Length: 470
Image (tube, rainbow, N blue to C red; front, side, top):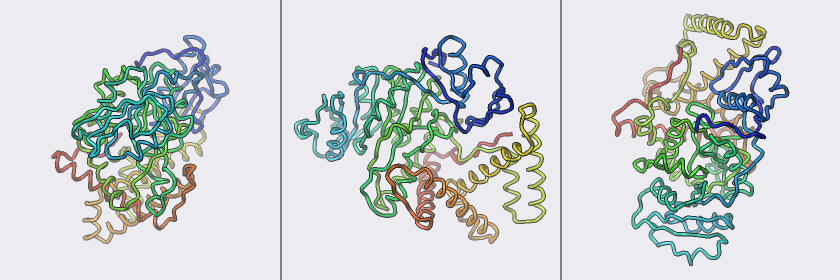
C-alpha cells in the first residue's frame, strides 16, 4: 500500500504549526521535527500552503508532504455508506447496545455476543432500523476475538468497529470514510470524547484527559508521533487489509488495538486520526473501576514490547537534553553550570543543522528552548508514571530526590492541566487544578502499577527502557 498514488482532486494542506523558512524553500516541523528542503518546482506548487493533485508531479509532492508529517489530507470524495458494515462486540451491556444501535439506522450491523450472561436475542433489540445479525460466543473469548468473529462475517469493503459503550455523533462516519480516498490508508479513526451526564471529579477529569481521547489535532498514526495508535472503541478499516493481516491478536487481553495499528504500519499502510469526527464514550467514573481500568491498560506495555520492541518506550529524548536535566536535578551549582554549557553546545549543534534555512539566532533559541522544555516535561511525566516505584523509594531516603519528585509532579500536572483545559471537548466539563493534580497522579500510579505488573509477568524490563537519541 505504501506506493499507492493519490487520486486527482485530492489535496493536502500544511500543518499550521509547520514553519515556512526563508523564501519558502525550507519547512521545519512534523513529528519527529525535521527540516525539509524544497526544490523550486515544489515551492511554486506549494504556494499558499496547499497542493491539489492533478498529475504525477503533484501526486508525488503531496505524498511526500504527507509522509513527512508536515501536511494533512484534504480529500474531496467519500466512500459510500453502502460499503460499510458495523461490528459491535458486546458482553452484558444491553442498554449500551440498544443506545448505539439507535444511531446506526440503515447500516448493516454484526453484533458479536461475547458470552453474555443473558444471551442477546434480536427480538430484544426493539426496532433498531438497521440490518442486524447476532453471532454468539458460548463463553467469553475477549474483545479481540469478538471483533475477529465480526470481521469474518463481513463482506463489505470497509468495516467499522464500535464498542457497545459508545454513541457516534452525526456525520462521524462520513468524515472518517473520506480518508479512504487515499488508497494507501488502511485504517482511520474519530476522536473519542466523554459522554456527558455523569457527575463527580473523575467524570470531569475523564472529560478532558481520557486515555481514549487523543486530542483536537488531526494526525497520522505513527509510533512516537503525537498519535501513536487509535483505540478500537471506534475505528474504520479496509476489510481486505485487516483480513490479510489476521485481524486482532487474540492472545492480547489489552493493547490489541495498539498492536493492530503497529502491524499495519510495519506493512507500509497509512493510518489517520480525524478529530472532526466524534464518537462519545461512556467512561468509567467510579474511582475503583477507573483505577482498575488504568492499571489494566498498563499491563499491555510488556506484551506490546515483546512484539514491537522498537516502538514502545516511556520517553524519547536526546543524550544532551537527558544529561542537562539530570545535572539540573542534582541541585548543585556545578551541575547547573555544566547543564548550561551542555545547553549551549546543543544549541550550537541545532544552529549548525539549520544553517542555510534562513533562521535568525532568536528563532534558533526558541527552537532549542522548546526542545529542552519538552524533554523536561517528558522526564517529569515518566518519573511520576513509569518510574514511580523508583521515585518513591528515592524520595524516602533522599531529601534532594524528594524535592525533584515533588517538582516533577507539580510541573507535569500544572502544565498538563493548562493544556487540557485549552483543548477541552464540547462537553464543557471543567475541573479545578487541585483535584486534577490528585487524579492525574492516581492515574499515573495505577497505570505504572499495571506496567510493572506486566514487567514482572513477562520477565523483561523492556517497557521501562528509554529511547535515547544522539
